Length: 227
Image (cartoon, one colour):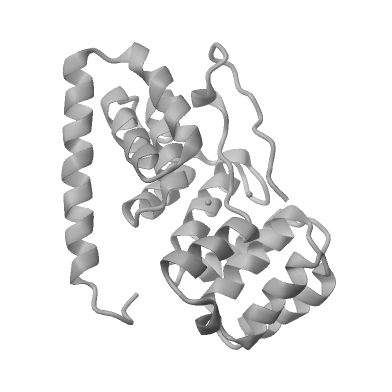
């Protein structure tokens, strides 16, 4: 669900399990909400105009359109403004301002914003680096079904960042992210294979299946129009 950020390699073997997080950017976000939550028409005029301007790389004009949508309380606009400030699209790069906008979106339950807040805390961008807060935000987003957060949470459990090391739980979250279509989670899961025995992998998959069933039950219980 990223202008896309390069992975910053960390230090265990050549594994992507030690690559830090990749925040979702505007382009990925607008695709997600278009195809999985809202129709483009339902986004609202200012947001739709902003997307069109952004795609034409008219970032300053897009920024103004998104700010107008944000003034009207549009949660998607909150996220997009956060991403634009994080990436420096149409505005000077400002992680603290990105955090402010992400927080506004996260307060309304936006899982992508919650995941990106975790990224900023993990990388110490705009805030003091804090693995416990990062992991807490990843968990919140992961429980809502955000696949990037699930992948990042799995890495946190593998490395013991903000939580106790738990390779079974790490495999569970990374397996869920991969099952949901997260591409880098597949590489991470394959690397994790070497750290778990068959019984542990079986337990992790059982946990993942139980979580998925509970999540689907929650989603089915949500009435149309509910957040």
